[in-house]
Amino acid sequence: MGSNEMSKHDHVLAGLVFSLQAAAMQQMGKIQNPMTGEIEKDLDQAKGSIDILDMLKVKCRTDTPEELLRLIDGAVMDLQLNYMDEMKKPAASEDETDAEKEATPEDPKDDVEPENDPEAEG
Image (cartoon, rainbow, N blue to C red; front, side, top):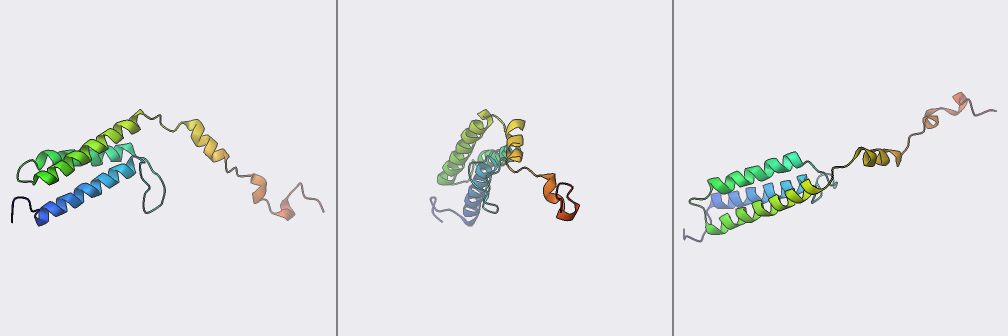
């Protein structure tokens, strides 16, 4: 195998990098969860994914093709910048959460059957 060729393990590592990068972007709310179609944000999980990639970057410095090292470096840098961007944004406030709840009010009268409804006469 030539020095520029990637081994089976290098391909697996590249796949892991792409997977962790996509997971972190999803956890930061930058892309939709493909299972639900929803935008979800969990910055603690995102930090964990970024930390794993950062650890791989350090541990893989020897005996790893330069191309793969650049891929890992770029993924970690991109995710760290996006993470800092998300940390600067204000968290969803209680008022926003309450406003969302008020958008779909539940009327207790909707649960009353017509024959038991005190307002219904006749």
